[in-house]
Image (cartoon, rainbow over all chains, first blue to last red; front, side, top):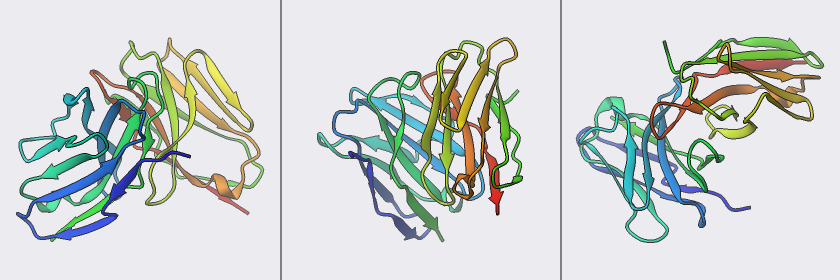
Length: 115
Length: 109
């Protein structure tokens, strides 16, 4: 069964450092997302990406965040200068259809710990 | 009003019990709704989609009430393996799916 894969599974970094989280969405999916979940809190939308551009972003997704699809398979989330409050589980998701119609398939997540 | 609201629980039920969760949403234009299941420290996984008045899949039934803007999830004959957090999900304003905070279910033997 095709799946969304994410790397790394866990990253520990110092405050102020840059972090890149990587995702390989399901190959025939067209819509890509990043969500995050702070421990004990709800899953929060960060950004959606379609046709090689951001289609929507939340207020969390400020100038410190960026996304890229550098090739035909990878989808990355970069945090330029990490803060303590960026510590969370970051989930990548993809879907074959737009958010209202299709199932979101999630990766297993990348746990980011900022010290 | 929050876009999606759920009773956080926890709901502690014995095996075999029937349990129901409710979820309210604020975007009256939403056309599709989802229940996701999330195990501890794992990714959310789709449990059911609800596009019209309701959907049934084995022991699970989801119902939609557009007039009151809520959806419900009913689990019959609860199993230990049903213990998880159940997330109500609906399209928010704009191009995103919005997750509720989740309802914790604990099924005990």
